[in-house]
Length: 209
Image (cartoon, rainbow, N blue to C red):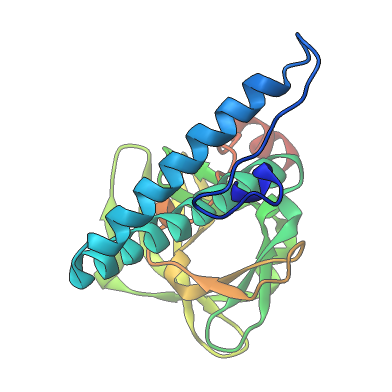
């Protein structure tokens, strides 16, 4: 901003501005002068600020920037996932076996994330677990699914309108974005993942099976 005045940068120096009328140069110069005054006022305020307050504001700004970056990243991934769900992969969080991709998962009643891919059946085993027994109007669960490779629990086997479906627990998987290769992420709940998955299409599933 100071450089806009050319070489007249010392406090007692003067400079002349030569411009054609209506060129907009004078208006831009006035803006530069105003910005310079604002800059000096801001510097003075920072210099007069207590050190603790200064550090606090720096920390807050950094945290805001980090959160803003995360939100932009989340929105960007959500848009890419909508067009190509296969870019996100789910791995067993114990042995890292590839379990499925985002295109294999659909959601029942905005809460149950089920895998609809036929090949997924080859990757898990089923065992009874009375602690998981739950009966509702449209579904029931009383069996647990687990990784065939290491035995890690992956979720439950739920019966939804007479159809058996493996329901995944996100806490038992690591999630990777194959497009960015930015490492694996873990989540405790499905609502924490930075993308949305499609609703379960009951009619289409039944007709194809």
